[in-house]
Length: 121
Figure 1: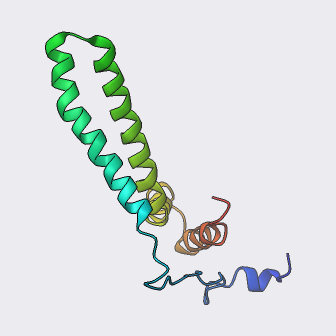
Figure 2: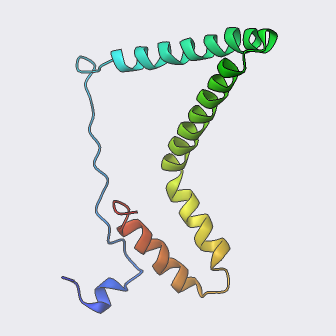
C-alpha cells in the first residue's frame, strides 16, 4: 500500500527483496543432526529389508500393514520436501499451463505476485 499503482505494476524492474543467506563457518557446523537422520534412514531401510519378507512368510498381517503404513508416511514426507524445494518452478509451470490464453503481461504480473507473496504461499 506504500507504492503507487504505477510502481506496483512496473514489470521492468524487480521489486522483491533479496534472499537472506547465512554462512556457517567450519567450526560452527553441526554434524550431529545429519548423522542422526542418516542413522534413522539406515535403521528404517534395514527394518523394511528384514521385517517385510519375514512378515510375508509368517503371514503376520499386522506387521506387514505397519510397514506399509510407515512406507506411505515416508513417501508423503519425501513428496512434501520435494514440493517445498520445487515450489517456484511448479508455480511458474502452473501459471503457463493454466493461463496460456492470457497475455504475457498478465502472466508476468501473476508470477511477480507469487514471488512477492512467497512467505504467505
